[in-house]
Length: 214
Image (cartoon, rainbow, N blue to C red):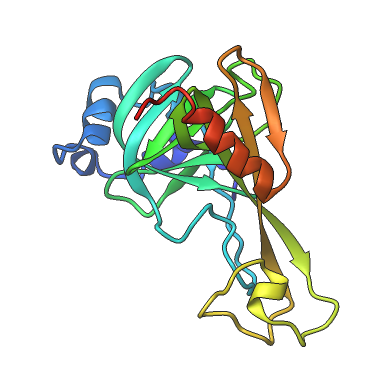
């Protein structure tokens, strides 16, 4: 089901559902199904019971701008699969969401959160999408990672298993998505430094703001 052609799915969405005035509908109205980011597979579905979420956060799809193959597409509903580091798009007026992958995407935003594909921009970093955390003299980025794991024992707290305190944590579920973070400092000369401790992150913030005068 995940790889069902998008064109096939679009045939079952009424045309007037695309013409409600929002930005995404306008794109489709003008270009039909020829938009490159609509030629994608269905987003994966994790239908089994689990703790945590495979998404970057619990805010859901939020309106933002997609930079796809160098072209900007504003006003789209976007989210991030933090397990595969793939961008997801919610089709307008439809429950269908698509997996856009990562290779053709330079950057995107969700609400007030900006993500950058640092590897695609030529930086020596891990693959995936990094959230811009601070900017000034260089930039500070964080990548949220999620890993599907299975508990060896059910006698675990939320924080010990998935990495953060989840009020909806169910102790009797063995499968969970473990939370993690990867940080990088991009210096003014374009070099990338991976930050492996809170102390390094603190020093990186000081570096980013070292150009400021008070």
